[in-house]
Image (tube, rainbow, N blue to C red; front, side, top):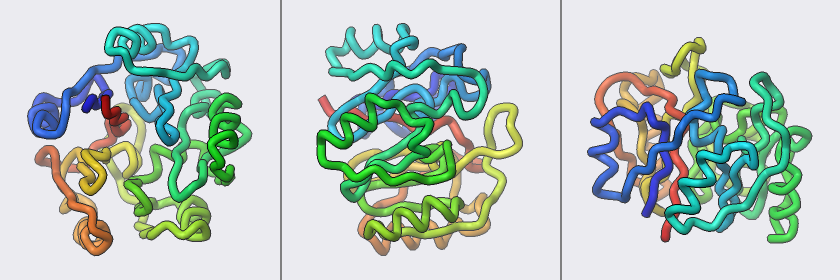
Length: 231
């Protein structure tokens, strides 16, 4: 198992991840806004069994090729301001692709439709960043994503917006502060106790058969999640 991670991910987190798979650092892609230019949820999208990456992100392509990881290219031009930075900030769950469809890569949408996924539009361009999602279980502070996911049968929990650490910006997202460790386990960068609804979040996942692992001490921090690839 490979975890494609932010190159800024702390050693403490990497050590915790070692029992689940191998960390592979992603270099920054400077066409994206600098604070999130190393965030996996901005650099790649895992849609079903397909891994999409920006055509212009050549350093990332070389890493995947060297590891013999199959990839699909997104042709959409990347910009350093919203919404030109969210072409791959989408996710698949419950037979659907969720994202701000006007901004999502055409190649991703075409692939999703070929695979029989229904396209579900949400207003939030940072759809993947905003969603801690594993299987059919989702936690978000975004009402639109919560409503769209609930309508498609996902188990959802809407939490209050709360300051989550992130480089430069005022606040990060819960999706970016979490990652899938395996099919039944979600990991968080930091302690859920630092969130006022942390125990509610933990109980919600556990009620739905998902184990929760805290990968480091301290407050939750948005490193852009991670992309898990099983070889």
